[in-house]
Length: 364
Image (cartoon, rainbow, N blue to C red; front, side, top):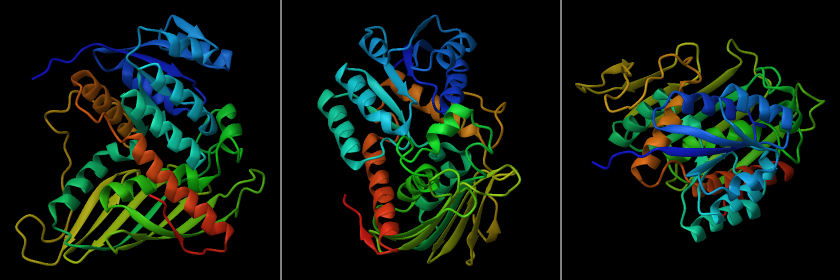
């Protein structure tokens, strides 16, 4: 087995609070360290550098990219800013990890994918929802075939709102900006939901969507979106995203998959997350409704028991990513190609909403 190597990381921007989650994860993982931080918001960036014991800080991300002592760079800037930074990182010969959505425009996302391919580096999209224990178990169950052929899916994913879940004011400002953020609940929470659906069920070929602002007229973007999906395999689905969710822990990520042989229900961010499976046959493993016990795999090289159930997937994501980087096990995670495919559905959804819910084919 290839021995892991030390991983030297650069972080561009603390504009997104997920940078804080991932910095914490890095600090708990042996063999990885943040070497340098860049942030155009000097106070914010210097504060992060002090919290995580990083000596090198700059307000110019280009200085960080030019360094020759970094193995990879993680980008957590405003959505619309990703493109220039990701391309520069790739062209410098470094692997790049980009917060989702990878871009706000399809043309930018295509340029990013092309830059990574041309440079021969790894481009990873931060689809952290794949890394919850519940999503991991759901994937194994779906792939086992016990549900039969998928008939239809239902997904609901959302938040009480960016401010309401406690994000910093500077993040709230740009996330609610339709240019810097690229939209509202649909592009933000929808990115997580759509990636999970693609990962679990397959490519999406067509979307019909509606967006609305029902509870936050001051933000200038949608706080609710509902879409009907057609998968390439013929299955149908629906996905609801929200930024005005009134619920206990102020967020939800729930998914239902209905197949010819069984049903799966995943609740990834409930107070007590779980996966339930129904099989109406005399199956030794699944009989009636069952709740499979989910334990960490013995091979997981980390401990995430100190993380709250609804955020543990950030630790699992970063640990998995860095372990693959250290061992050069490609790909290192959900790729920028996945980010492009997800954005294609998001973009088609916005086009559909502008056209009164018209069905829009997805450009793959």
